[in-house]
Amino acid sequence: MGKFSNYIDSQFFIIDSNDLNNIHSELFGFSLVDGKIFYNHNLNDDIKLDGEGTYIRILRKKNSVEISQDLNGCYGIFMYTYEDNFVISNSFLKLTEYLVDKYPISINTDVLLSYLPANLCAIQYKETMINEIEIIPRNYIINIDIPTKTLDFKILPLDDSTISIDSIEGIKLLDEWFYKWVSIFRSIALETNNFEVDLSGGFDSRVVLTVLLNSQINLNKIRVYSKFNPENPSEDYEIASTIANKFNFKLNGPINKKLVWVDNIEDSINLAYYIRLCNHKHFGFARAISQYPVYVTGGYCGERLKDYYLLTPQEYTKMCVERAERFSKEFKDPTQRVLDKSFSRLQKEWNIEDKNSKYLTQLLLKEAENRNHFGKMSVGFYLTNQIRLSPLCDQKLYKFKNEGDLLFALIFTRYCPELLDIKFDKKKFIKEHVKNKAKEINEKYPFELKKFDYIDGANEDLNKDYITEKQTKVIAPEKFVEDVFRSESFKNTFNTYFSPNVYQKIIEDVENAGYQPLSLVNCSFAMLKMINLARINNEILSNNPMKWLDNFLEIKNFSSNS
Image (cartoon, rainbow, N blue to C red; front, side, top):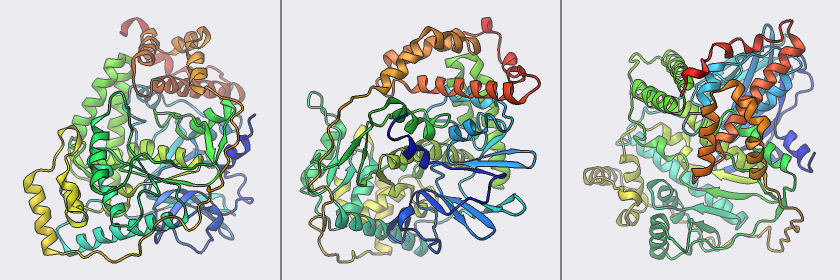
């Protein structure tokens, strides 16, 4: 066990219906309320959270418990049910490990087999790799009655995609969003210089910069970061440099982080796996944890506000199924069934009449990809004491009807029109008629920026006398993970359940992928981990220890796969 094992354990919870009396109020993560950031240490039970941030809140009352989460569902609330029992956690892996010697579990083979060929992350709505565990939707609040050991749900209404931006209500909402983030950024800049802003050549990060440029903050006292390769400067960096020169700030300045090194491979891997395993496909293994919060912002989640996937459910399913089949035939039908079931449940729960509605695809991306990709990344940042702030994940922006690039065009036009004079990367552009429409709206509802005092730097730099402890041991979790995967014992075990060509394709990805080369390796670990936990569980609890294999015996004929 490493020195961070207790810290890691403290970041996750297990609530078992047979042990409810010792539950206490606690906030996991952070929440944004009225421009202020709340953590467990400065939150009291009287403060009402409104779904912004990265959190799960457990609120203990006299004879009941309320569990709520941010409205992007970043952690995910995972709930196991069996007969009259329930167990709830904010980590799928922690929950499954807890259940293994207590309650019966079984493999959901469709979900398991749809995970490896998926794009960024798991694609399903509520299901998980364990049949008895479901993901609680992002707008559900769980209420537990302690004396009766029962629970029910309160469903929060979500008015996504209902407001026209060309309206008094829309403009009021947009200005509220703008000033909210101005307030948050100014508060951080007064507190610390440990503030990092990602800037690329695209739309999304430039929208966030629009807010910063109006916040009256000395951008040279914080870090505006753009990835730079001196041997091959990217278009992103060149555009970011043009913006920096125009607005008189420097790129890639220093940032003082007082770091505590993670010197144990198990701790580094657990920090990633307890958040992401079976949900996400991109794994960053932590090397250090910051002693003081480091605030990070950028254009994360921006594609959800644009016509990123203008596909019907059938078109989206076809794209995913074809990708799965290219990987291996055994993944084709499970992917089809998982998506069919997810779209069917979404259509029913959101009362959408047209099963071909493109809005269903947008919903699935919010319910699955937002939660599993952007959400798990945000939790990963938080666990290393980096507070990832995402203005483009703000629920206020989700209320707008999807009108293509009009929302972004209006943000630029209204708050910083000079940014429209600088090109975007990859030959992206906003069409002239869209920019003209944004100008028309802005003229109809003119804007005048409030006056703010200039913030030249933090009142007190927490790290002004920082001393990062000497790194006495350098760990290599990626090498460890790859070595395990390449071992003969792992290969033989993996090939027991899946076609040999699957293992070989993963090896090819490790050797050729330029980004996240171990993505599929970690996915394979997730799949075997769940299979093994189900095996152990059945050996302990079942009279038929081979029952867990039943579904796998029907998956495929090895010789028929290529």
